[in-house]
Amino acid sequence: MTLEAILAYAHILAILTLVVFLASEAALCRGEWLNAQVVERLAKVDAIVGVASIVVLATGVLRTWLGAKGMGWYWTNPLLHVKLTLFVIVGLLSIKPTLMFIRWRRELRATGGLPAPEQIKLARRFVMVEAHLVALIPLAAVFLARGFGK
Image (cartoon, rainbow, N blue to C red; front, side, top):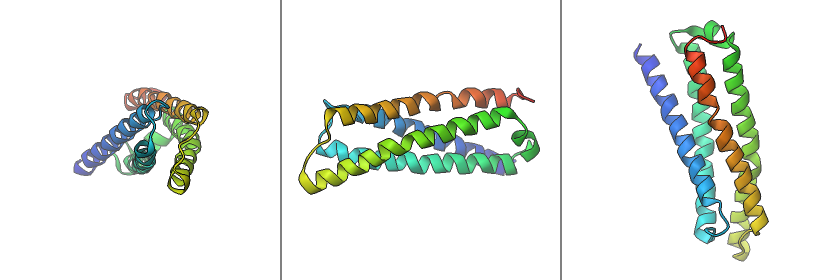
């Protein structure tokens, strides 16, 4: 019982961290606000999003293995697969802005140059799509937790 509660807490904390820092990325990724400090901050915030994503996945998987409902209950429910699919899609979408933020930081440090406005808009578009898809995952989660899909 204690392990399940700790795993649930860790999972929720990781999800909140992911959402807060993904929202921070979206807020920072605006042409009118982008300066050298923001480029550096975006790379750091994106790294936190990446770590939080790994913790979300790890704690979620551990909850299916060690939780009270057991693997059989979770892994046979299609809603778990919906959640995982959305999570993977968000992860794949995050690759593009991550690479952009790394490139922006490298260019800033080498030449002092900032990214072009169209590059900033493209990165923000990817981050916004990620943020909107992440918002759908808890919808599947609440139905999963209540036994829908079985």
